[in-house]
Length: 244
Image 1 (cartoon, rainbow, N blue to C red):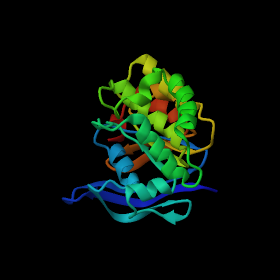
Image 2 (image 1 turned 90 degrees about the vertical axis):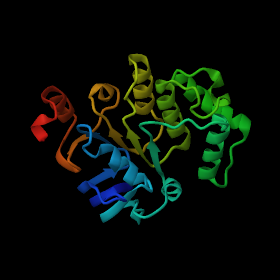
Image 3 (image 1 turned 120 degrees about the vertical axis):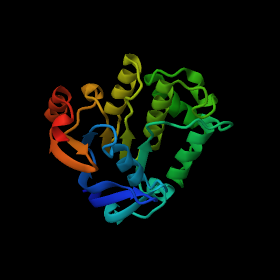
């Protein structure tokens, strides 16, 4: 069984501040795991560490993807092994055409069977339409001038085209209006292939569209409680104070 396995993971900043304190979690392909928790609890740090952000150091434990240890791999090596990260705050990149960037990324992943510009456009346009984008999205610069909602939708468009084995989405619902949330929720929930998903969120509202089998509460760099989808509703009603 294909898995993303996190084992007793401790990590922090290069300056020595410990943030993650023994996180263990196994995500199987086809499963949806939601991570919830208060600000500063370690959720986004977990996402960054899993993708190999250079500002963080793993001090104990490991991360494996399909039985391959990726703990000390670079972000591009992790991507080659089938891991994807959707950013909480996507960066604007001046002068880089979004369509060219995405087609190059798809071709890099596909290696042998490259996609032509015409075939790429035929694939990307229906997905962009489902996300509520106008047809000229691939002609624009990467995230430049995009609204907050457009940036988040652009991350999901990349996910849909790259088709990773495992995806980490860091608060894809933050800053979205109702319409953008619906587009994103439905797009993620209706992907036409099987992959493992680690969805990081503060609120239950995106879980109306994406139904997790597992919910984990992260506080103080640890998973303090796990359960099924009911845990998300209970936590939203009670708040996070009961876990502090």
